[in-house]
Length: 142
Image 1 (cartoon, helix red, strand yellow):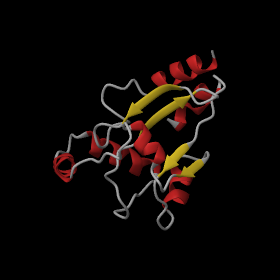
Image 2: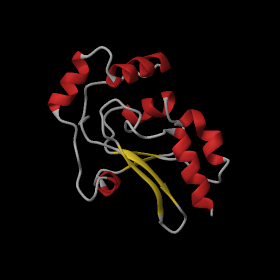
Image 3: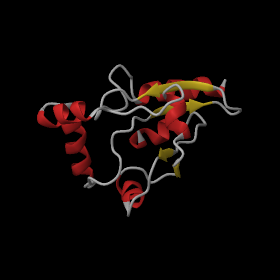
Image 4: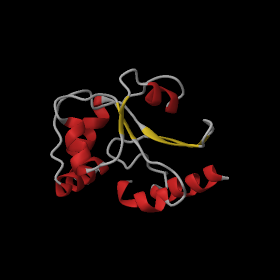
C-alpha cells in the first residue's frame, strides 16, 4: 500500500499503520523496510476487533501450515516479496491475528472496512487492493 502513498494522499487522505505488538525491533524494521509513515500501537486490539465485528479473529494453525507447505500459496508470495524488500521477519509474537484496512471520513464515518481473510494475501482475496482504497478515499472527501 505504501507504494501508492502519493495516489492515496492526493485524495486528501492520511495513511497510517496499526500494529498489535512491538517486540524487540519489529516496528523499527517495519518502518525501515515497508512503512516509513506513522505507526500506531493497538495493544487492546480495538481496531482489529472493530474491523472483524467486535471480536478478534485469527487464522488457524492448520491454514498456516497448509499455506506453508504449498510453495504456490499467497503466503510464500508475500514472504518472497518481503525478502526482496529487505524485511527478514521473525517468528516472534502472535502472528495469527487477522487485520484489515479502514478508510474513515473525518468525523468517524467508515467508508471502507476490509477484513483480512486469507493469510499472506494482500488483505483479502476479493479485495481490489490500492485501487479500492483510492476510490474509498475519494468518496471520503465528499
